[in-house]
Length: 242
Image (cartoon, rainbow, N blue to C red; front, side, top):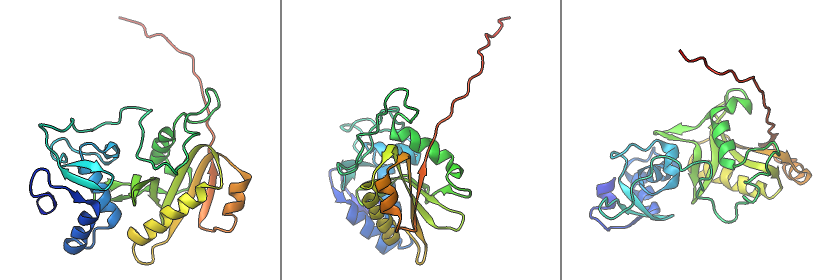
């Protein structure tokens, strides 16, 4: 792919050119999967940490902006990203996606950052419903799955094989999240789902507002969940040194 799209250093190609190239040469590979691979192969893309990029082997491109790429040039480009910088990591969200509640008040019993909630649920999807599992395709997982320049918090599969778009809010879930979720569902249905494959949505928040309950009351393919945290303690025992 790198030879076909960027035959020389400095040559810039667009995400759409990559999508079109795969549609012509490998039509079974889906649009979202192509986009995710571009992120994994881009040395400076923060979200590549979710796609298990291999040092050297996957250090192919440099992301010029959200839609353009070129070959990675080790002599002049920053060192590749392999691990997330920590809990305060910022993800490539767009300004219209509301995140002012991400930093929770101390002692409020909610996750401090949306990334913490996302990472926990991605490993424990059965807590939401039995049989729910993280989406995987061509080595790409459903954590921060790219959808048209934005990112789904979690893309999953349920026990029936339906695709499930999961949107997370660490604090209170308001009705404005519905438009965001429906946009993601529509993109997945059009670009990632197989013919006839069902796509539905789940919203997880610390608290669901009455407006959100009302907004989803006529959407049978959207379920709402509230999360709760619990804490257990055990007495610390000092180890005896030999």
